[in-house]
Image (cartoon, rainbow, N blue to C red; front, top):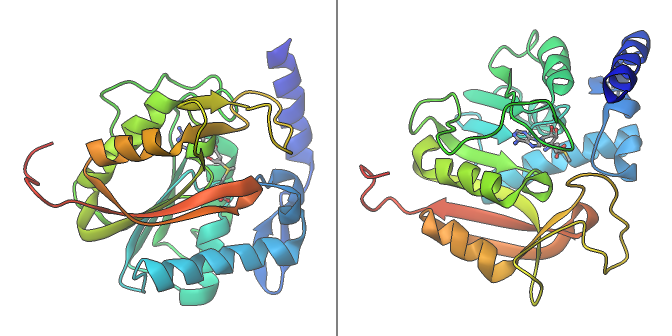
Length: 258
Ligand SMILES: C[S@@+](CC[C@H](N)C(=O)[O-])C[C@H]1O[C@@H](n2cnc3c(N)ncnc32)[C@H](O)[C@@H]1O
């Protein structure tokens, strides 16, 4: 039954237009966007992408010389913002578990900006890619060591299981070049259980698998530290739906070791 519903959904999706043009930029059609009602407005969607690009320039030393890995890139909010603010960068790689989003970005962004490339990761996520492969302990992103100056994950750990989040964090040190930085958002609270899926307290009503995965702050930061991450800055609760924002650096000590 679920398969039939998915197939009908995919057929319907093919018949609908998948993009809009706003202020000279191609954007994903509204029905493709994730991340809250405010992103349904074209102007706000575009402004949020530009604001992310500005943030990377201000706090993560992003420039046209940067190599950026956008994990969970979705329908291209960040790369659209980077293209508007910086034009080209040295390298941008977007990866995502949702094939449709990767196809959209490849179709609409890569032809005019070939340095912006997108890869589908067929990993299971109960919310976004339930039929994907289980993310094993030996999972590695398909990129060489020290390939990136910035690793970015906006609203991705907020929808991932703890073990999978830890697996991704375990890749940061390998992927980052010396002096590289990570920006990520997550639902992080104090005085709560270590990990809660769709917490019932609070103003938000979470629905469906992995809508909100909330981490207790010390538990989350201990895990970051155990993978050589250093919290450079932490800002509580100001991102989408009350997520918190982290900028991390990664310790270079004993870099030859895993
Ligand atoms: C809320 S959306 C955020 C999209 C984008 N980062 C943004 O801010 O506009 C979460 C994205 O994470 C992706 N995602 C979820 N689990 C993932 C995983 N294990 N690996 C890669 N992408 C994943 C989803 O497919 C979805 O596109």
